[in-house]
Image 1 (cartoon, rainbow, N blue to C red):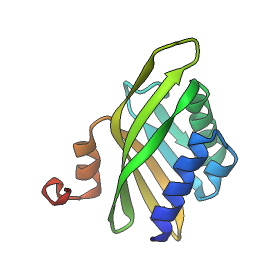
Image 2: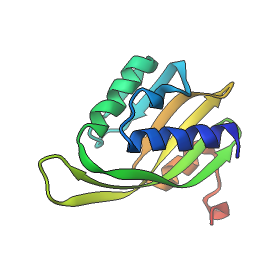
Image 3: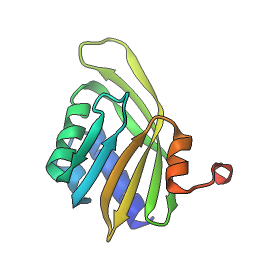
Image 4: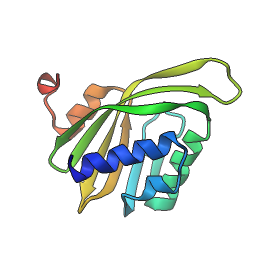
Length: 135
């Protein structure tokens, strides 16, 4: 398992157990998080504190559930994680979820960029990964 893969497995495990201190373990001090329009926390966040706050707010809407990595794809310093989210939001009895992707850039073992994509194909294009090669 690569340093990047291990870091991301730890990151999502921390999100799922709501450990917002642990999510920052592999963040570079100058991390940039981009959550696209249409996502609940749409915007750009800079630095560990802002990114941690963004993830904390998003995770704070869950009553229960998980966001699990299904596949991790690496192309140089860029990593795409296919995710399956299944959550029950607070004040709701209904479960919701979907499949999407996050993209990461690593430098010296630390996450410098963290982006979310509604469509997995967009994440592959961003990372320069040929979707035909993804089984």
